[in-house]
Amino acid sequence: QTGSNKLNGNGVYQIISNPAGIFAQAQFSVPVAYIGTKYYLTLQEAVNVDNSDIYLVDDVKLTKAVVVEGKTATLNLNGNFIKPIDNNVTMTGGLIRLLGGANLTINGEGEITSNGNHNVYAAVSVLGNDAHLTVNGGKLTGYYYGIAGNGNVALTTVTINGGEIASVDANDAAGIYHPQAGTLTVNGGYIPGATGIYFKGGKLDIQGGTIKGTRTPAEDYEYNGSGFIAT
Image (cartoon, rainbow, N blue to C red; front, side):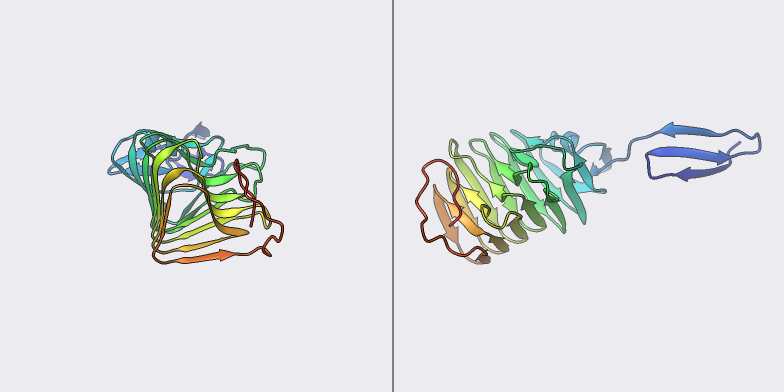
């Protein structure tokens, strides 16, 4: 016989009582995303499915980065957050990393955020050859970069149609850091940062949107051939 059941906040399903006086509890895992009719316990499992349309159903708290490689995915934030599980986590390569052949589109309301953790450098990083990122919505906030690239790769595309791309650090940070031989297209959205966009390589096409530098312009700025210096 069943009694009253309760889902508590610690991932435990409890049978509070029943006529036989039995108390029981069992561990369970809560899905964070679904594709079609199938639910996934981790975002990594979901992005491993090629040509997927992923909807988040809960906040995603990461202990390590989500890696997309050789897959195409649309990520609908659906009002949820993707963030480090705590401030002890280090992800210098970003919360979501796009490696070779990755193609990720981000839609909907919600946020991919470092959550103030200075060891999480970027929200999304484009790190592989022929990697592609499109942002249509949501807010991407890394500690130093909303979106970061890799100067050693090529044939990438980053397209901003909407949403907000931001960074936390008030001095040495950029909304977007683009050092690679790829194409950065801004059609819309809001891109604030100490430096709004730090562009060092490839092709830049700005058709719309708002780009805002929030730091006092540096009077002694010198070009750095390897890395980022706020302007």
